[in-house]
Amino acid sequence: FLLGVGLPVMFWSVRNWLLFGYISSPAGTQTIFLFDYQDLFNYRNPVNFQSWTNAGLDRVIGVRLEALGSAWHVLDTLSPPTALIGVIGLGWLAKREASARPALIYTLLLFLGVPLIFAVASLNGSYYHSVGSCAPFLAVGQIYLITRFKWSIFPTRNLKSSIKYQVSSIKEKLEVGSMKSEATRNSQLATHNFLTDNLVPSNNQQLTTSNSIPSLTTDNRQPTTLKHSVPSPQSSVLIFVLILLNLVLLPLNASAAINIHRQDADLYGRIRDWLKVNPAAVVITNQPASLNYVSGVAAVRLPTNQDLKTLDEVAHKYAATYVIVTEITGRYPALLDAPENKLFPLVHQGGDFEVFAVPKI
Image 1: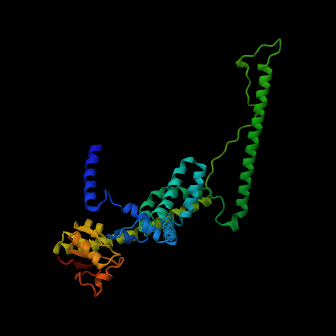
Image 2: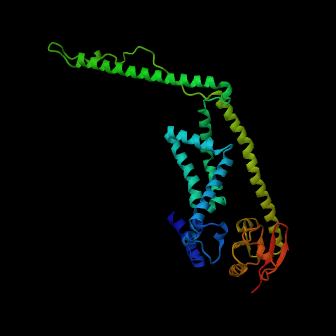
Image 3: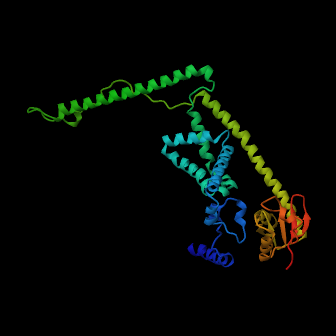
């Protein structure tokens, strides 16, 4: 097993070291120090701890607070009408049931850890793509909190009956506790009498056999049966409303994501068709993974926060043929569209994407 895994990893790591000076991508560590996601793709201008500290404490704290707010919005979208119901319910359940505590800890660590450590990555989808793992826990928290809901949803009409229910419930618990205490005292007294009469013999009395041991329970009352909590009618109504909200809102949120994917499929399908007519071995673009997935053409990330001279260096380093821009990102396509651009001539205007030629050396 180690040989089967180690050999390919070793050769790939050596290749990465020779090409990039790293065994694996440093992007994972660099995301901690980001303030702008586009800086992750800088060429010859690394993002590191020094650049992070030079930005100032206000920016370090500000971007993390923004990430926490964004993460809470994602939770609300995942768990309508608000994630607060699920979080409170899960916390309450974890307090009563030890088996629910790992779920609560995981949910809290994910919510706090990703935005506070990888703030910019969280703002750009890392938390969004991870939070689905918390959905079952929040759903359980929602149901638990609502089933514990005893008050009427119409307090002006049923407040008095609700208060009576609560008072009677408390009185019942006190009576059960009193009966338990009395039964315990009776049991202790019976034990004391048994020990005095049987285990401490007089001069003319022999120890009794075990068959003569009397029952230690002298309380003849029937034991009280504790009933499990049954959800109130109001709880059932709220659960129904909650399910209805999820059935309506979740498909709406999902449809927005589906529409984005459909638009991307259409866009990159047209780029693929253009590249079939105008072939290229390598291109530079703002979404290299999507373009490569659809077209099969090798793609390099556009250094969106850097100038045309840097772009020219990247293009010739990787022998790129075209620069393809599909959206406004960083300083592009403004730099390419400017009259001052003499390096990269526009060769195609596709409406929602532009193609610029890389000059030959």
